[in-house]
Image (cartoon, rainbow, N blue to C red; front, side):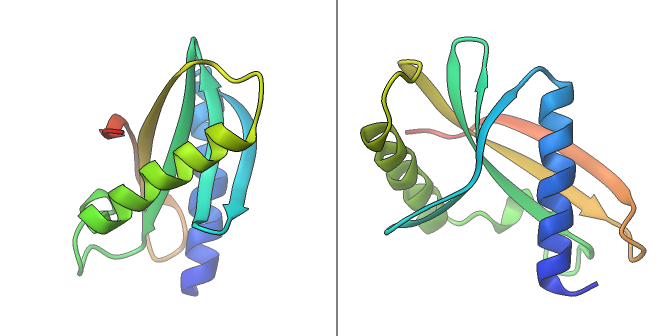
Length: 120
């Protein structure tokens, strides 16, 4: 699978996984001048920004290990931009990560939710 295909499949699997855990997806692939948020959802009283990381090989580490400090800062900036550009949102928010590992055939080996993975 090509890198883009792996990423798209991971986002689709993550969205289904989140919905199965009671998240209500508001938007996917929100883009602004600062970048992109993979999934914006609500869960209970929280607005949740979700970064999806997908790997088909662990040669360069696990999906969650690929999130650098710079990426974490960018996720906070993106979350604040979303909050400032939308109305009627829950006042509580957080940033979660969904780590997806696939085998070479594209089958899910592991999918894991990490709540509050990035502190805003």
